Image (cartoon, rainbow, N blue to C red; front, side, top):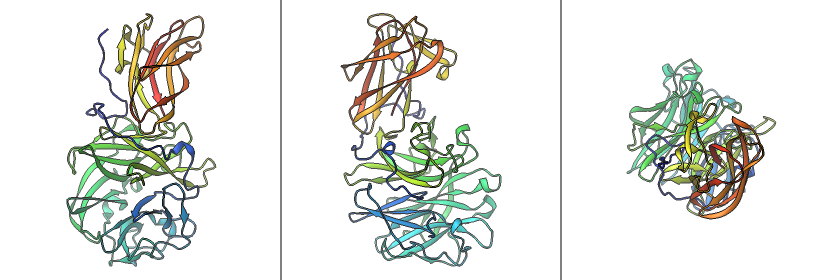
Length: 440
């Protein structure tokens, strides 16, 4: 049987799998939050050896502030990082959201979201401070960005390149039955004035995004731009994180085929992951910070996970990635149409001593991972596949009876190295068909 091409369900159509760098095993979202209190929409900036995290209103503050030296242990400041909003804004703490803080070289700027008195829409304002620990004070006579006809503007994020600073933001169209777009707009280096017109990048156009996208975060890795964003309703398990990629700063951006982080991709250990930010850890490698709901729905805690790059495409430790069997290397077996299988295809007739299906998978963190196999077994008894990891026999995967085309899941623990790994499932006892595997 000819070998089929290999691809990942979450990759974009253009994302062929190639070598990429991973991250050090110092954090994992599945281990629990690093700050278990209401700390939504975290933004993290490093100043010297200290990380400063800022978050949406809670605990009687407009903007929260916490510090850490390792990204894992945090101390929450007693003072409000933004003691007052600008005169253009209503002094309502519940309407102050999603801060973005950055260093200008001489001081620090905060972009924040508040309710504009004139338009009664959420808009983006500016505050400044002499240090990341100092209280930020509003500047300017009005909001920085406030497209009232588009529903206002929220979720500011900063990106710099070649001496230019850019502001990313979302028009808050879902407030008013409008589309939600993520925009890129140049601003002055101190972030106090806009330069030129905003450039629309992407809008909600996938079923899994619900009625909105928001919370942009832009980074550049392996020569292309990666635009993270959150989607769907923030208040429950539907909230999730996706990404899009581009070869040029202003696009066009191509979205991944599936979200990067969801409640399901974390197997329920994180609920509604979103409001993300990317930060470089003490070891020089990337982490993704984000919030997720507590099990009792009382608060959105801050999580941190290792973030790896498969040729510039993100993989988050603890968030499972689906690899479909028909797109793996298939040897002496057959890809067939299969009712109920993902994309309607599966691999069957893995019936011979030399039959196997071989997957190439990427993980950002070495060590134990969970391999989950979606299978069908109509044999008269439990069937098995021999499991080989990176050329080393690693036991077997057992498949209880399910019936043919009745797809079920079974899981085993596997030890994987950082970066790329080869997982082979070969003929064992009786017979089983493969729909896909998941690695988390």
